[in-house]
Length: 127
Image (cartoon, rainbow, N blue to C red; front, side, top):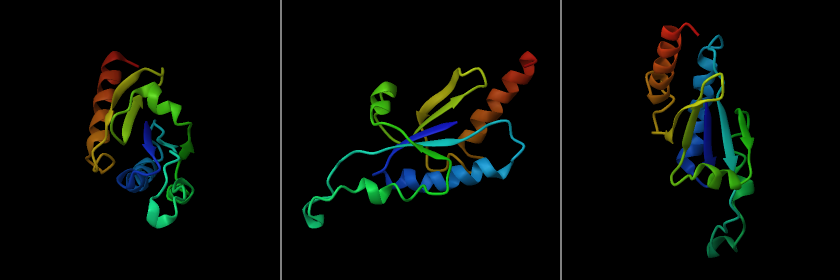
């Protein structure tokens, strides 16, 4: 499971915390979860003397399984909204790609349902 988000997305940064708890909830689970953070060099605004915010915003996912990626990744995936979730199976095939709701990593949230469907299909095939 990958979650791509920008450093300016407040909701995304908060979702990284629940993503981390979700991944740690069952250490025996056969999946990994990673955040993919990219930065945009956008000035904060005139009230902040035009400072670039991303250095401060990048501190939020500290202690989470989040990797910094180049902004070009956004164009590669054609992202129009955030956070973008990508669920891959063990062969690297994308099983889900789309914008994640705020409760995506809750106990019975969207990602749990995606994983249940994936594992049910996998078990029925004998994988």
